[in-house]
Image (cartoon, rainbow, N blue to C red):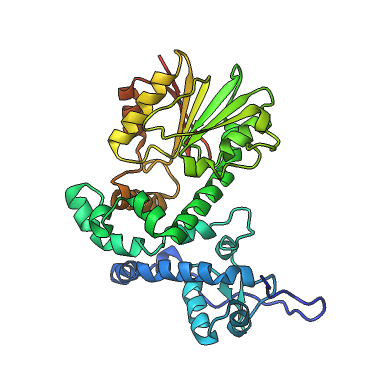
Length: 361
């Protein structure tokens, strides 16, 4: 995509000034803050619009006017300026004294080429189906169950893959982005001393497994996930890839069976379904593993996160779409112990994830 970028001799230096920062002492009164929260959908919609229009990709290092950006993203200049003005209120882009726009730290995260890009995560959290289930949160709170089947006539994943192909692609890209960004953190954390084989259960496209195999040349690994998922496995793991001779790809559903014996089992961000699915998965791991095998379970926690607003929001969305939940430290330990695992140390992986070290008795 073409971007607005500076010319060597004529680009002015501009200072972002448009949106005054409010100190804690000047924070809005409760009535104003509640009004802002009630209009929270407008903020989410603005982030989604910017991501779909690729405004952040269009804006280069030089200040650009709404009219200049509108030419690139094929938008009407006046409404685009209104969109940018709204986003500036939240620190997404900044406006200069002469009415142009520049990047902020957050707006750069909407660029697809940023190494920490959140573009697809932002799109996933605001997909069209989300706007239909959020208004029914009170129903889900009353019943404790997903509202998705009643709203769409089928389960969440059935709907996603049968009726919402574009949304399914966004989901896959969002999960891939998230996995790639955390894979190296997991590889750096885990001590594989004495481990010769590892299996990544529900491991998506295998980014965590690939990072571990690259770091530990003597280790062999297996990726287990649904057939449609592992069909898009990391190229390093597939035939002809640099790790293919030490990697095995097994299509399957861990809720039904875990047909792999290994020294180490990794379960990352999949124990968020309903409790029965979580119980079946953990039982299947224990049935497959030999005594003394390690099981490392990696999850977000709603009671131990620097981003409680995001994590608790995702917790509610899980309730709406699959009847699932993000875990507290206690709830996850309880489920692992009830399944028969011996829980050991708990380590932070990064700012958002924790790793629970367990052993099969």
